[in-house]
Image 1 (cartoon, helix red, strand yellow):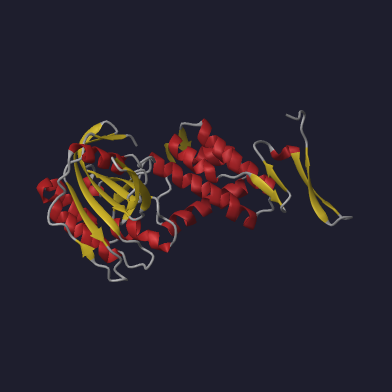
Image 2 (cartoon, helix red, strand yellow):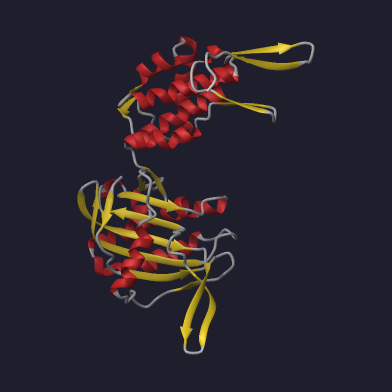
Length: 346
């Protein structure tokens, strides 16, 4: 996803505490009044951390109109002058979701962007951001009496904890969102994406590619060894073939993929059954044909680890055909072994 934000519009800022600790909220009476230099600094702080291509949309299990963020943001798009009033509603909604004892208090920004360009299309956008972590800074000053140093606590503008850009597109489907969540470890992290925003991945080429790659990886590592006699080398080779298909083709076709990568009819049948189970368990749609997203392939390939770990002594990295790797058992030592065949040593 490519986008550009020309300038920052109105900004409302509130402080959100932890509800389980009864810390409450500090609600501002009006929007921030800042100079141009500070506005530019805030723009960089808000925008520069959105790097990925994965898109989301607001959702609700019953009806989209019940999604609180959707309702408040829609009001802002309809009347930008309502931003501060809606920011108060958003702040209180966020506070209601901040019930986990490990959720940190922090500053919550609601921002209106009048000129936002996404994939070449000009629209407006609303940004929601929260800073939770504070860094220590040194303020050094010089005077006629010499130098002085003071320790200060503040927000590091190079680290955005949580952020969301909501573009005024596809309103009927929950808008188009980009999300940053750099404090997403532990169960408490779910409150931003799942409880506050309530989002699901947007159905596009990136999402389709990500789904099928995750499906392939889980099938090879989990289901395949349960139903068939396969070695770690066999699994590594199939992972390599799967990834190679996505890197060498522009479009995905389930039939072609099954024939070229999985090949054996009984394994193909198992894969198709697993695909249906995978989609049902995760409540997702696994499309059988789509344009492959190179960015999704690049990201998901990090989890395709074709490595055989042998005790704590050796790791074998398999990049090609496993016919040059043979597994055996030595009865004298009672240990397994691998034979590696190669022509040249580099």
